[in-house]
Image: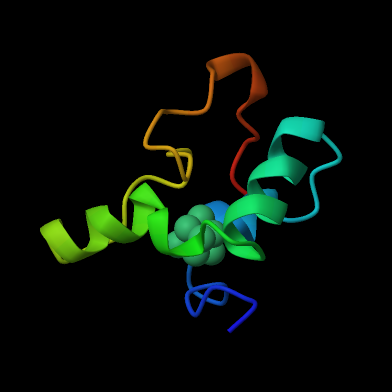
Length: 73
Ligand code: SF4
């Protein structure tokens, strides 16, 4: 599989997929559509808690810095 199976339901992806910010693009390229999709901390959170993490939690498990957060659409 070359795309994460959660693309359609992942809050992070939905919110930041079209961001032009290089860091966001990097996360999408590396995790959501890349080799690290199985290491995504958002997935791990879902498994552990049975619900999705906050949209601003990054695939690394850190929170998106406030100045980069986009308001919900
Ligand atoms: S952030 Fe993680 S769970 Fe969400 S689409 Fe990307 S790889 Fe999948």
